[in-house]
Length: 163
Image 1 (cartoon, rainbow, N blue to C red):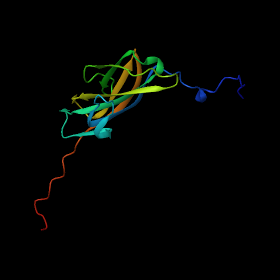
Image 2: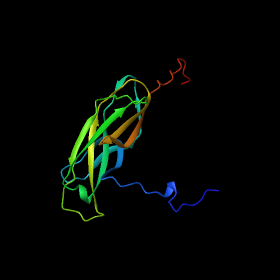
Image 3: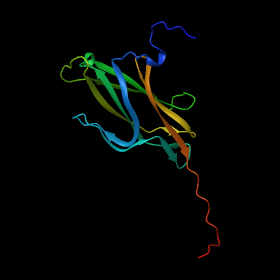
């Protein structure tokens, strides 16, 4: 039997709130964030790419949303986006996202969100699980996985067809 010390159990502890969090991340065929800050996405939400042959190049957008606290309004932020293979090796050079949570001062407890779109065109060498990781201040704040596979050629049609 474990003695109760009055401390909250590990599953009940609340994670300390960082000043910036990754709200969401996904892949899309195309996406844009115009000056009004709204996010427009075409063909979004996939987690697998079926390539005609490997090695092969593919183009897609990485869509991400970042959430800031009231204390962050007006401050500049940097996030590094890294595309890695199953062994954790970089597939492309890291991309640095720089943005600022702007707008009116918020009261404590209010949040502001910023959406970003990063277009990538990596060369995939082999099938497997690839990961887009988001890093801020040397800390990994989130990731999203992409399964890359090579399409199998269709079975040949028999020479003597019944029609």
